Length: 253
Ligand code: SF4
Image (cartoon, rainbow, N blue to C red; front, side, top):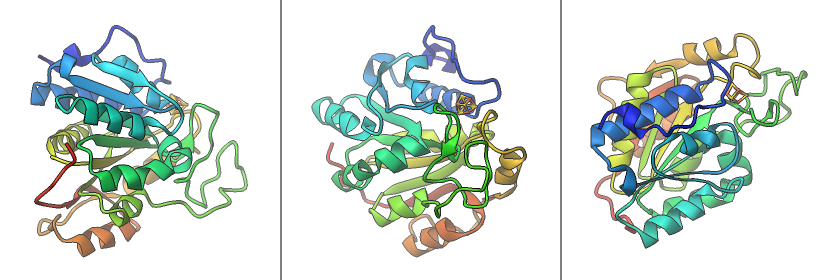
């Protein structure tokens, strides 16, 4: 099957230029690379712009409740371990209302992939600050800048013991494809943060600033070195790649 064969007949309602298009493309490419049969695929989400993504895939797609995609996906995978299970959602869905589920999904180590499309705001509800909005960013709904310190998604999942942690950028399709392919084949809970543009509500120039802060990992980087992963997660730069990979893995399913 080709990537296009993993698309449903629905046309995305995302704004033109939204980073979510890149993630949809990268995901369908990764699924085609792995030759996963659509009847053995479940794509689950919560609520938000990026959470519309399952409906655009040819899979058992479930657009669930705000922040509740992980427990639903975990239950599905435990009941049907033969299903490749991918969870997608935004930074608000996953790291605000859904945050309580993240460490528990990680410590249960159910074999699912969790991709967070991180655009640093709530796009569906008109651009409010999310848990990952940087303090100095002034957007339409918070013109004085976000009030609180942002949460660091990579540090959060590392601290919870996540065995596979990667970061990508929605504007770099081959990289998104590669990170999702590696995450899906990892035999345990895998987390991928995908930095994404919101062309409608991000401040002018923010997407460019974000992209300029990205960097590739050094050639001698060892994803098995946990403290190196912590250093990369705390960096001012957004290092792209597999930041942490724990072996061997003993997944629940
Ligand atoms: Fe994408 Fe932002 Fe439009 Fe939502 S509001 S579809 S995140 S560009």
